Image (tube, rainbow, N blue to C red):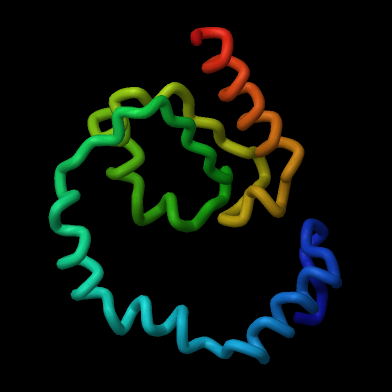
Length: 118
């Protein structure tokens, strides 16, 4: 890229480039090549709910949210112990890299609340 986002460090980009040069794109592409088999392997888990206490962290501008909006609305049905949804303002899909302080704060708050309940 001509200019890196403010949250992306040059050394991180170098790490990604070096790893790509070493491994190529076969692994990520194989996930999509094998998508039907992945569904078969996960069939036993269809309809299974997540009962552990859960935290959902998302970026305000995460493009994935536009095609998972219905899933987000029904998340409480599938994750009955969803304790909190945290939206990181100004972040996109890579919120842990874009705003690590906000993600860490959300995680620590979630864990602290669980600790005090124990």
